[in-house]
Image (cartoon, rainbow, N blue to C red; front, side):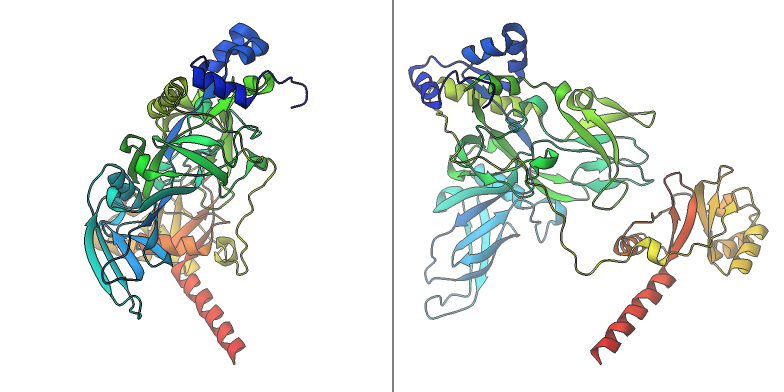
Length: 511
């Protein structure tokens, strides 16, 4: 590295590991050592910095080989505790993904739980079906297996150990259930992930020591970095790793299946990576603190790929338990376990010190400038702005039932947004509400309006609007701006007309 001098080699460090003279510290201690002894002193004293992370990593899974049955079967489909694994590989091989849901337990159980149960030595119910051939005459099989019954169980996680994670908050009026956990409405909480200063890629942002062939701690076993993970995006600070290891050597302590309410299943994975302190540059990078790690708080209340950034924030602020968003104090909660991340780093430290874990440098450097591309879409979805009715006349919440009835007659619109004195959306009334109000002799709009209003924004895909209408059994959504001012309305009638026009156009093209 330019500007630094090599102070030791990987061979020298491994020799110290073998003879027991190696100096190992966890990453959260390195900043204190650099502050006390300086970068040069720290580089000379410390040989290895151990990192650790323990958080939800949906992009994980296991390759399994079941061995051949008698008579043999070529599995087309296989289920483990009612969780389907992918079988398009070979006759009795399958890949079980952590995020796959059970077919009979809905979102409460899935691939991540099966993986944890296997690691814990539990019996798993296996069921497989296939088609018959001369060499594979069997059509189905049911049995029970444990991890020891399998020929191989190789964990291969396509995307783990993000360089950093964006935090999540919710500006909308309703609770959201996401892969970032439950997000309360109106900025009432923020969730985040990652282990901060203990995270592996934070301590080696230029991938000097972490790459293909790097030996790692993976769920209690010795594993390896395969290469860059899927969605590797170091150009924006979101580098990822693809990792592998023998599941038969793993510990259930460091593998935990989990369910995020309203979203689905994931797998908590314990990963620790030892970083050899080869020079002063590496010593300086491993001294990073939570106060120096910056990420963004993203608004998940806006349902599109490029969600708005609410503010930048440090991990020190996130870990404090409270941050400020637009003048409002918001509690923060980690999805990752700092306790378990520390335990991973400490366990790896102990194994290195006992001479049980040697270091390896990568066979090649990972890319540092790859940028994540969005999905190519040849058929764009229509947006709310393409179909909404813009000439909308809201009514004041202080208006009478008669005023609302008159407005419905004048506009021929059966859904009227209700606004406050500040012209912000506070409710909605329908023609049915008016009829009910007359029958029950209500007098004011505020008595009958629906207050918990589902809304849409201009750039929201129409497909998401249709999902809201169906989920909440409603027929219209007011379209609002960021200040909750009404700028239009989208109705099920307009959507039906658009779908009919599209189908008619497609039919004309065919003939």
